[in-house]
Image 1 (cartoon, rainbow, N blue to C red):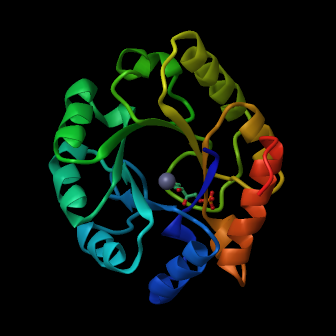
Image 2 (image 1 turned 60 degrees about the vertical axis):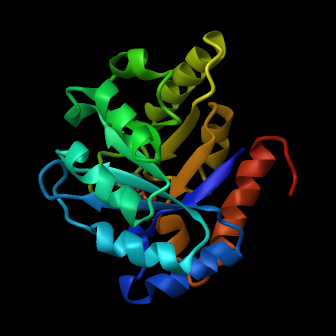
Length: 224
Ligand code: DX5
Ligand code: ZN
């Protein structure tokens, strides 16, 4: 159940296919794709045509993180392009229940994302609708930022809530994940760990993926 999700934001886009093949050969089964609109976050990245191209070269599931102000308008296009999971930010969804249902009805698994300053209480009433909850451990917009330690408390609180209520959504973390903090993150109850620079800023992304996965599995008390 513990997975490391390589985030292609940190990849060399001129060699994207090759870099995705490297982490896939290393064992990665889910690729994290960051979509930014220059409004919700102060950066731009990619749109549905890039997802469509990636879809053709990998069997990995595509976890598409929409950092855009109007996810309802674009989720269907990303799903048609091949997204398996669509993540939307609570902060931009006044009708979050409707948005999550829309994503499911269009054929993808819905996830909800919380910024570091957004409390868990904001998603209390949709926890039974989501496939996964993504806790941002940096302010979204850029790779290579430092992990915000408070995120660990949020992970533990969400994990407690999941156990108490007998819910089965997965818990994901995104931002500043490295070899040094994986054990604490896994101990706090996280299932999916997004890693950008700690994978793609290495000479061999496949080997970097395997190294991080091993640390995560060791922390979970499981051996490869
Ligand atoms: C940040 C993105 C992240 C980013 C993580 O806004 O959502 O997915 O790629 O990059 P690292 O692992 O370098 O912090
Ligand atoms: Zn992301």
